Length: 311
Image (cartoon, rainbow, N blue to C red; front, side):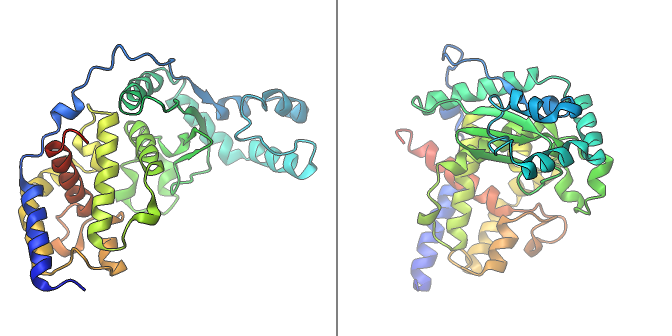
């Protein structure tokens, strides 16, 4: 247990860092146009799958399996596997959702261009890394995992990016504050966040509030480094007025954390209030933005990276 005086010294040091000049324009203003990578292609699994000839399903699945093995790695001679896939394709709800996905995303040209640009920044920072393969699919509203990464592939649940007003989202019973990020403009951001998480050794992260805050700050800073033109509101999933609130009340939030000696607290309920999704940060009332730990962490890491340009 740290003494109160040590906590205050360390906390005040962090306060000075966080409220100091933290522009990172120099870190993000890099030339990537001449960086050579293959143009990114997004493979549309849902587009192909729902257009298969259902009367000849096994042969059709075998035909597309080489291109979509990340989804079709099971034994297609197995009757149970075939039945599950047939049930999925014949589900009228999923068919309707897929039809709407095709209306909103008839092609992926714009997204491919955005990803190509982001992966050029990624190659600038990590020259040895390969560009991941990108796939879209209909997840059946897997809102907890709209982006998944494995085997150097990013899987994008396209049905989680149909716009916050899509009527089927309301049937999920989710709170309104979650719906705003079910939108196209979050796809690249969410993918970069997922890639950031792959570079973090979670076994080495402490369990205190400050540990969690700085970890979120790293993820946000990485995302911004990959997509420098991203709006702060998209980066932090804030509305315009929430961003203004966080900027203007930054000092007050720090004073609250220091006065109540919360930075090293390991209380899960407290951490949830600063880190996890919610309509607001309850300590500061219903007008406050949510996840203020994200904002504070972003400020800390941004300032640290600005002041340590060799890292």
